[in-house]
Image (cartoon, rainbow, N blue to C red; front, top):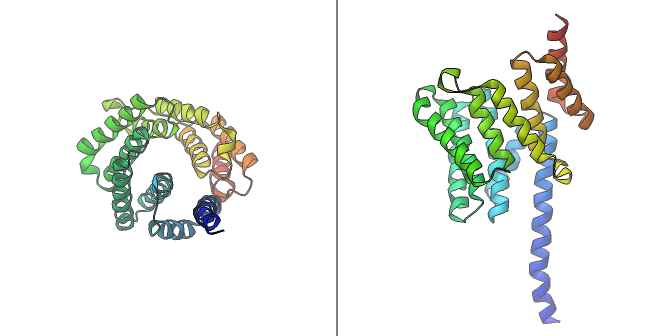
Length: 244
């Protein structure tokens, strides 16, 4: 009986850990589709206090990555710096733990991009480091959808005089989408997938390919009708633009 107890304790711990991870994923997804970044922040603050193994820490970094981008987009630069510092420290731990090197490089690409976003004068250094890490991530693993997203971001926002191309950036986003869609089960409650679709839709809008943007937004709403950002903002604004 005593031996049975010893077996049950680690099994119970594994069960609890799996349930917590699933809960975090669901909470993050619901926060994303309802535009509740305050709830998103609560989740990552709770997770930061947990003791993680590699996969769970990688999940936290993924959520921090999104929150940092949100803060930069809304000019909350002090908040962005705070969470970027946390995410970079977490990434160092992950790298020391011999986690997927392609993902490590892809996050480094994103984080250098955030540093650039926080201070445009660092573009010559952080822009180059961002590009180098994107290329390294793809050289390690050309099937890494997250690396293609980061490479697409670099190409989309890099000035044309330095080799950037918005159309090429969109091609890389579409490549990431194709890779993700090879694993349909992994798209359930996956904020990354919806975020990628939004990115594609916004990119099409930026280059005035409104018919393509419309198809993307309609596909998003077909998949997730409760996605408020698309339902109440992006899609109506696009329709208004097309009718003017």
